Length: 191
Image 1 (cartoon, rainbow, N blue to C red):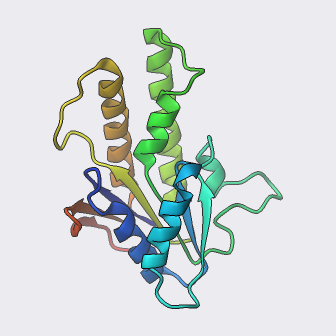
Image 2: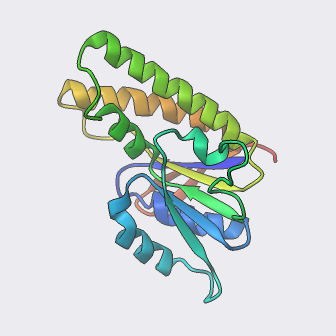
């Protein structure tokens, strides 16, 4: 099972996820981020949340195919292997990167096909997360809490991330909403 943490931009999702992962399993823990250039910020965040001097955090970057995180190729150790718990941070950022990719066509039919493919991939990913033996905490930005999208590209991101967040929330063992650094449990399934 996994815990899904959502909330607005800079609401404290990542900090909460790091604390929660450290409570769910023994070190070493794994932090999976959406982009490589956050390494220093990630290290700083992890440093603040270490339980003790012996705590060990490993970091990884989300692959282009999220299923590879929890279902690696046969005979290949996956990133979760050997982890006591893991944080998969910023699903919304991963989705936005995929939607904005340089190889993405701009015609409506291919945009709709990509949106559907991303939502389908996330449905498969959520099912694998649910069955993961490693405790996981997954974060995503909650969309539609404030500023409305100004353009078609922003509306597209909102539409896909909102759909994916619903899929993740339905599969999660628990859902936590972050507001201003405070956590509010929204839903918990018996484990």
